[in-house]
Amino acid sequence: MSRESFLLPNGEGYRIKSDEYSRSRGGSSEMLDVRCARCSTKVLIYQKDGPGHLKRCYSDRIAFRFVNPDKESDEALLQCPQCDQMIGRRMIYKPESREAYGLVPGSFSKRKYIPEK
Ligand SMILES: [Zn+2]
Image 1 (cartoon, protein in one colour):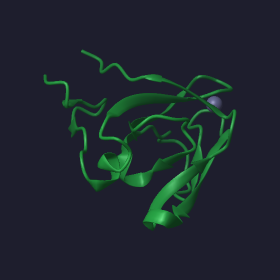
Image 2 (cartoon, protein in one colour):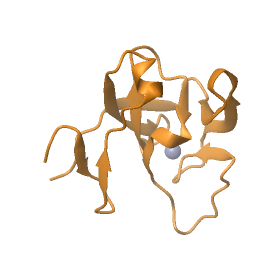
Image 3 (cartoon, rainbow, N blue to C red):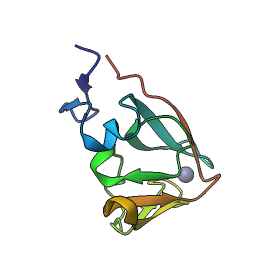
Image 4 (cartoon, helix red, strand yellow):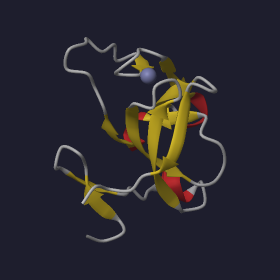
């Protein structure tokens, strides 16, 4: 498995995207494990481009979204699949006309994503 691609929890492959968005942020990307700050449940596997705080998650960089099969998920909201904590709300990042979830500060934690073997 190369550094640029890995397997997601559903067994599908993910290849780290490199395009004008990542280039405009310096060209480096990392994969993050985003969890609910309240109950530590996994929420997203996310490709973050460039340095800085995580303020929003762009839809085209969400490698994997954990869902609760017993709950109906609202696509306009990003909620913890376990405790329903509000993590983010869908928005358009105007400078790039790009769909994203604006994140609620303090509602999530993040760490480097390490693919499961
Ligand atoms: Zn939670």
